[in-house]
Image (cartoon, rainbow, N blue to C red; front, side, top):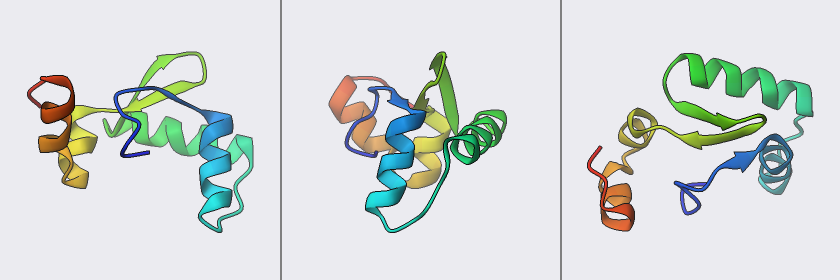
Length: 75
C-alpha cells in the first residue's frame, strides 16, 4: 500500500493485499481493523469503504518524506 498513497484503498483491496502477503483476513475483520486505525489517526476514511494512510500514519511508517516528494505535501 505504501506505493499507492495518497490513492484510497478499498476493504476488498486490503483483503486481497493480506492474502498476497500470506494472511487470511475477512472483510469484517478488515473493516474492524481500519476502524481502529482510523480512530488512532493512522488512516483516514475518504469515502464509504475507502481509506488512505494519514500523514501521521506515514510518519509512523517512516514514509513521510516519500509523500512530500510524490505529492508536494508536507506532513
